[in-house]
Image (cartoon, rainbow, N blue to C red; front, side):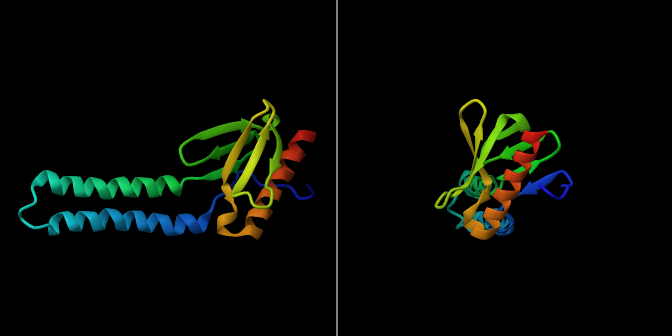
Length: 145
């Protein structure tokens, strides 16, 4: 890697977040308005469940907006839909992003691999390739150190 990197560096599907976060807020508001607009024959528990449904849908949307990967001087933090994993540089053997893959993967020193959903092709193939290459360059740089 020729140019020094200022840490931390974060890669995330920003357009996905830009769409999902307002949609999640809209879902909560929409279901709350529907709960109050229901006919009088609907009981309080029906209205509460309507609001809870909106919150549940919003939580799923927030979960889908969660993926990101952050690199700093000590290592990489991978946040996927549900799990978060912290890796030191020595644990990462290689960054893979093959044609047709939905997101990058990390080959780890223990023989396993880890999906890096924060670098995904769905939001722009060329940007995803550039992000995967930048992460690969950081991994290779820290392997030499």
